[in-house]
Image (cartoon, rainbow, N blue to C red):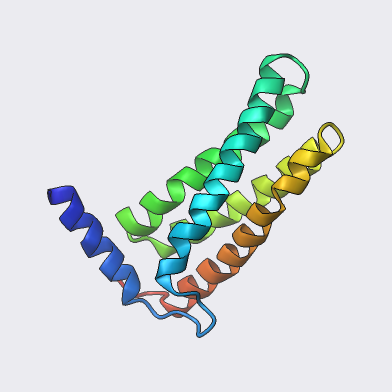
Length: 141
């Protein structure tokens, strides 16, 4: 019960931040991430399976792991710690590691890279949004 109250408090904190006029409504994030997490689960799972079978070089898997970890820590940074700057740095790492992962996997399994394009587009948008929110709210707690 305490965690639910804390989560609501943190999300209400985010709702009060200054955002650009082009920011999507908050209800859109859940459905978008639900679809993206399904795509991520299938494609990353396939990459990890192929690597486990020895059919992909280890460096490819490392880039996907970095992306997965940085993606998973975004929410705790943004909403748990309420740290826009840390979240901005993290989302940039998500974007960079995704671009690297796509460039690494494309020569081996082009379909995986193509399937991850919606994730790339959303993370690109989310990066610009987070950088804008960070800028607009710099110095505020």
